[in-house]
Image (tube, rainbow, N blue to C red):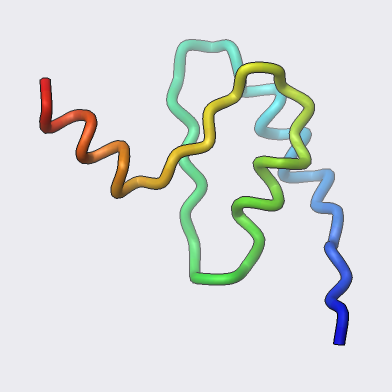
Length: 62
């Protein structure tokens, strides 16, 4: 059965308003609730989508 992707405009709009203020934005939550979909629904050029595990690897190299 094909699943329907929900548009979470409230969340993506809030992320877009916070972007550019010099803050890191982290989406947390249970598995398979749509965190990656919310990131992909934002209309921000140059936004980076990395997994926390990869971020922790990058910060330990410094």
